[in-house]
Length: 184
Length: 213
Image 1 (tube, helix red, strand yellow):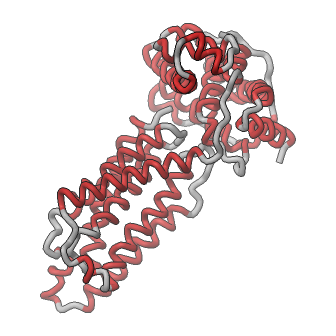
Image 2 (tube, one colour):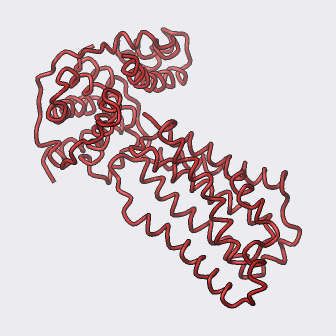
């Protein structure tokens, strides 16, 4: 098992247990691996790479409760990245896009690319479309970095409603990404 | 928004994830769905009046064992399909085992019966309503499982929908044994399986639509 696998897995497990600093490092390093992986597969759509990196990061975050600590992290990440890649190609090109080469998941963590291009799609604009009960908790807690209690005080929502708002808001954001792409 | 900003946003104040979220989700879905199915059976169909005597017969337990075996295997499939990157492994062959077993029993029963008695073994008294009753009883579990699965991450939506459908069908069939008066293996081998196939097909059709993430 590779060094990256062990290291990233450890960071994620700590992140899932509530260590936000470790989780931040995990997402940061993961983004570089995802970028290299997706850039190698989206050779005909190079402008979409950064959008897909962001969409995959959001999916990893929203679906992080499906990671089983006994499972190889590479397999989990690879399956998510591949699912998002297929989804994008299907949205773009219809049925004939399904011929994606089978690839070796172990190569996912072998390469990394920290040169982020600009994303075409602005997630901040999509965030603005969310209803207040989801948007406000995200803006206060996730963007301004307030705690749950501070966010509850600032918005007049209950603490439980703040947590639910963040959770549902980020899921709704993923759904908005899919829809905005289909309308294009 | 730059990718680094997105990363900070996601990591900021990220809540602790409880380790058994996935299993708990399915436990809740099966609990409520099973309760709904039992209620539906009791109100619309009624428990068979001779249940206490029937429970002494081995065939009653064979009839229950078929859906229970399928239920356990389908649950394993559902759990695996809900996590990205987990393979099904031997689950498909484990699913085939109870089906082959009941077909074998049915074959033995049919061969051992007089030719004139065979159609009674196959059709019983209730063949026309059995599959639809099983499909009906599977609906509460079906809906609950779709809800549970929507909150997870199935990367193969049609297959995942089918597995959830089979699980709900097996639950529906297990509950239906409390009402069903039939006691012959050939009947089970055809109509029970057909009943479970209805929600399985429905799941395979609805999966790609409902289970996107």
